[in-house]
Image (cartoon, rainbow, N blue to C red; front, side, top):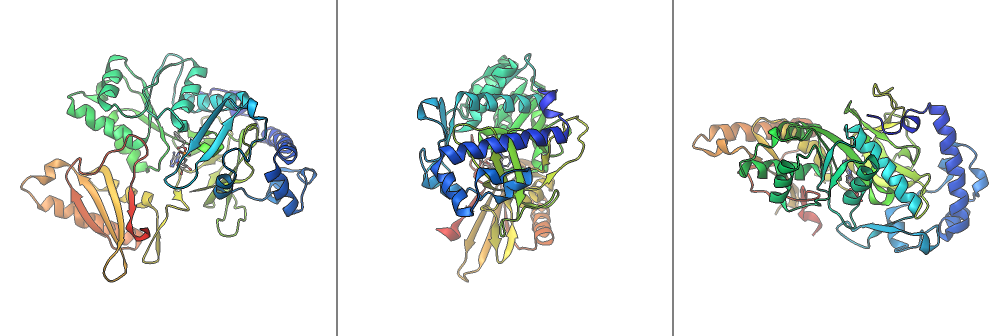
Length: 433
Ligand code: DLL
């Protein structure tokens, strides 16, 4: 279902004209209202008049997460404080929070983006959405909530956690759409089983999962275990929250709401803009944002962009599902590895469960050592140990041949690895401590 055909299926040239008009307006606004940007423009030797085409965006300096932290809390505000109606923050694990401040119009844009996202997963006003993203400063809960309100669906604001109640509600209120992190969806499936509820036989038909990395093989596990269609949805606090991009029924790349969020992919080393199909760091400019607009914001997320005449009819540019982040890449004995690559390998091996933990440490020899803990179906832990050995050596071999590194594989019983109700922690890098 296409929520806004006019915007989502607009001819490309028409959309580019719209983007340029927004971009010109944006640079005028921030140049006048935000000293931080005026100074950056001056340092780069440009004024808003230099932005005459969409390509001219490349003259504008990037904005980084560090700069957002340095200007905490309100250094990037482009409207009077009284115009702000809501604030969200992402804490990350370290450091000063990053702030996103929304005006009334910003909330409208966010609602529209999320209505498009939920519609891509087939949501209509007849649906019952169980929203198990956290409500609060995190953008997942309220983002989904606003989109659901615009559609007119029935939204159950569960928030994250309270797992037994989630299952009760899912059964008794006949939830059709589940929204939460992919890892939490698996936790729910597991908990349902324990409580004797066959989650596959309930009314679930689709799920919008995001906020953390997950692989294509993880999708298969989720679809199989929950009996629904799993869609990837992407966003980040700085650029509004969820609703920046999402998958349609083709499940082949995420359509970017590029009338609001102008994407570029750059070489993270040189800052050079890369063409369609080339992998690099995703950069966004918030074309219509009023509260805290961002110009060429470096997300640190790695993907590539592509235009593919999507059979769904949408003409918006797509991004490949994320490969990882420039800052979650592990360098193990000189080899670059993303956790998502390890996940893809683990999940392809028969007998593994979708719960794993990657531990990197330096041994007595001061060399990097990689240990991968993965849960294996309980039947393998009965007296027959040969099955375990086959799984272990298969994973070891695949990691070596696909990634070029050696890993110690530790197979553990179901429920050994800690479950998360929000973003899962998949990597412990002891080398940094
Ligand atoms: O996670 C917003 C969100 C909420 C997205 C609900 C989707 C659903 P932050 O907490 O600021 O915002 O974290 C943003 O999470 O830069 C990515 O690295 C990662 N991320 C978000 N969505 C995906 C996804 C929300 N679908 C950071 N796949 C981003 C992989 C994702 N990583």
